[in-house]
Length: 190
Image 1 (tube, rainbow, N blue to C red):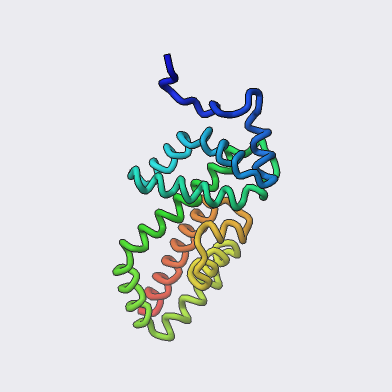
Image 2: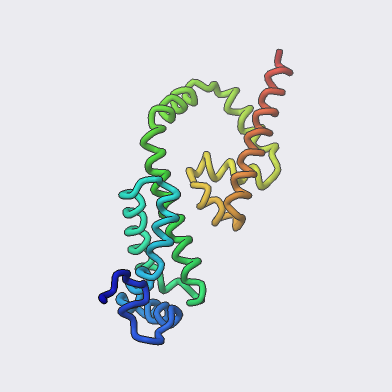
């Protein structure tokens, strides 16, 4: 009876471990990298699908992950962490993909925000700058990097060397404090 199910490790030399494949891939062996991707394809696809809930988009993300992984495999320092590393690459690709999708949806909203920002008086801008300046240092930095340097949450995380969730937390707290400071200023003016 023939093989009904093709197993991920079929076709590999007997005894060749994933770590050996990773080491070969790091040295530039694209066939070894292809074999590694075959081994992890199903679990990576599931993760991609969980982000986008669409088969074709998940396949696109998987393809982009394979491409980026092949280009950057030489940056992997510990072969035993290949699965973690390639999963991180996939998640970053999925996040970027989702951002592109979100940008398309929110273009009209952004246009409205830009129009409203143009209407802000110089006094209001000065109040905003003063309010930003009064924030705790890490909150101020997150706001400046996000809104004045147009960095993504991921880029801020890398630049400040803090986890993404910490960046998000700082962003929420900074916005809350700014709102309180600016509302307090309006009350005092009346």
